[in-house]
Each structure stands twice: as structure tokens, then as C-alpha cells.
Length: 94
Image 1 (cartoon, rainbow, N blue to C red):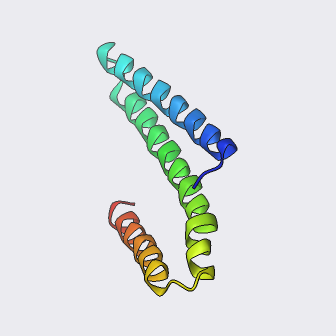
Image 2 (image 1 turned 45 degrees about the vertical axis):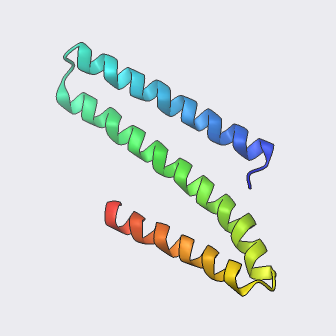
């Protein structure tokens, strides 16, 4: 679970991303140069990836560490399977 400071940081990042997306929408409506729009979309993708990294880091440091420290083999396997599933998705879409 994320603590309040982590939640706040993620919310702030997502708000900035939301603003970037609104800016891209405006650029499209204004018929701006396609390469300029693409540069902005790449920026949004990079910001989303950075947000994913922060959330994954938190998950590893909290939920996964807690599972590994526990005596619950089922929970340990579940958490590791989740991480492997996400890593596989990142490789496919990265």
C-alpha cells in the first residue's frame, strides 16, 4: 500500500499528465504540426512510464517484501507471479 506522501506524489504526476493530454487535445484542434503533437505524446508516455516505475517500486518495497517475509507460501507465489506478469506486459508493450 502507498503511504499518503506516495499517493500525493502519484496524484500530482497524474494531474500533470492530465494537463499534458489536454494540451495535446488542444494542439490537435488547432491543427498543429504533427511532429510537435507526436513529441508531446512521447512526453506523456514517458511520464506514464515514470509513474508506473514509482508504483512498481512501492509495490516491491511493501507488498512483495511483506509476502516474502511472511510464512505464507501462497501469498509469496501470488506476489511473485503478479510481478512476473507485469514484467512480461512491459516487455511486450515497452
